Image (cartoon, rainbow, N blue to C red; front, side):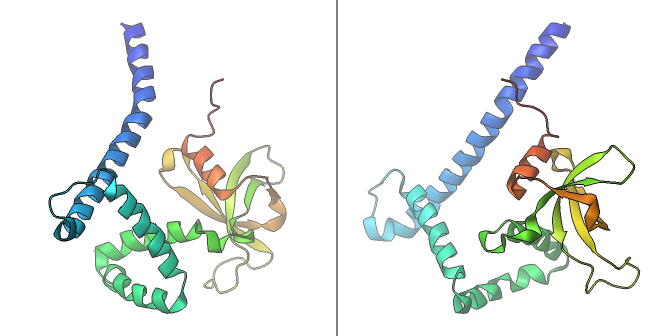
Length: 194
């Protein structure tokens, strides 16, 4: 019975990422096809073009990226955000997701996303994190001042993380991108079997 349980668990771990990926891709494609047909049906009638939703969905994402790259259009699009940033419950969810997405956006690359190991002097413990703030300027009273930085320490399986303010000399830069650190933390730094 124990062996059957092990085989089932291994099979589940193998099928789950593939199944979720296929499901999310299928959901996106179905949604994109429905929107595309609703949008172009008045023009093309009942004629169906397979994949039109995918092409229009990807084109829409590229167009949106192009539009928000221009200051004037970005200001107009920020008006669309207004309800999402002012409704009590929606505000918390939307602002958290937006902050997370903004953190990884290409125009924000630089030293603020530096991957580091944090080592407390006198302890052998090492933690991997991301520098999220280079100094304590502008923080409310009560924070220890000095050459300190904010480091985000992600927890495994993306159940959260901690932000700690530590002296800069406790940190050692590592040659990893923020995306690699987050991806490795997602699976608790487990080695991939050969």
